[in-house]
Length: 249
Ligand SMILES: [Zn+2]
Image (tube, rainbow, N blue to C red):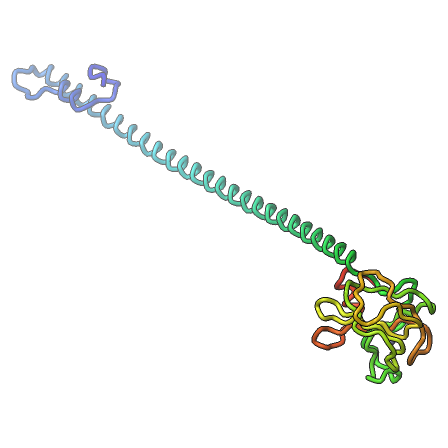
């Protein structure tokens, strides 16, 4: 504080110094002068105080506005950050999903390729002429219990998988039939053969020629009637079964 400068902010000391403590021993002029000086100082002080208060109010308003602006900016930045994080998370999840799907597709293709190597179609150069489950009076059960591969008489028949010949012989309406039993108990029937290359008890491997396409038994033309029986004894769709082994008849 510059106490001897009237224009400077006036403290209590300044006022006290400028105003005489008592009027005793002070001339009229001096008193008048002192009163005038004291009044001037008081006025200046009040004005200064008002100005200060005004400035303080301004400062308070300014700092409140600044604080609000800073707070708002911080909130916006945080919101943007959260949004960016959510986006990054979603992108990472999508990438992970894509990678997993690619891995699964690859694994499936590999499994199919491996299965296809160990399983083989029962014949070649064929046309599928009748599917499993088709209704018809020509079948004793009222519906077709196998899958028909029409092919010229003499076309080789192959073991669809490694197994043991359970039966090989005449089977009435089925004509000459070979029953191949796989290690899991599944039976694959090859019917209407013109000739058989294997006998009961014989072990065969995938792709081995076990007989020939023919027209023996209850038929209208040469074809392989293939059946698949589960270990439990039920008849299943040979097409779906072959497909489950990675083959596409
Ligand atoms: Zn058939």
